[in-house]
Image (cartoon, rainbow, N blue to C red):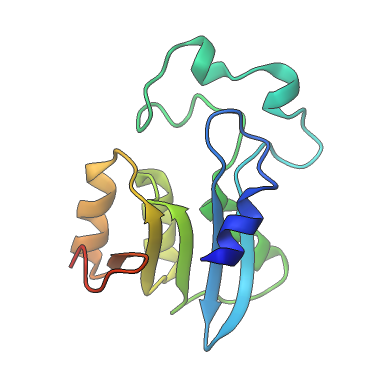
Amino acid sequence: MEIAQTVARRSTCKRRQVGAVAVKDKRILSTGYNGAPAGIAHCAETGCLREQMQVPPGERHELCRGLHAEQNSIIQAAVHGVSIKGATFYVTHQPCVVCAKMLINAGAEKIIILEDYPDQLSREMFQQAGILVEKFGERNEGK
């Protein structure tokens, strides 16, 4: 989780710094942090569209210039040809429902989070998929 927190410091998001690390067999497979796609102006430069529109956390994810940390971790693995099937993801915040769907289809086995996020549908989908969501430092939460 300490590595996920370190990765999160690279975030260019004005609202929340999030980091994700995919691990399997005690090896780091990929990392990701939230921010604008490569080559695109960062929100720190352009301003936060979600802030300007007063969009509450957990809603209207499509109204954001940035990718989420989990998305960037999945993309990094794909770009480098690394399978993340069966991986455990250490994420500084509970994944949103969009990321939950991606992690489910990517074959994530377990999600360990440091902080909650207001997205109940995400938790429900993980539960239906049989993916354990555990709060860092606690055991068997969310299953």
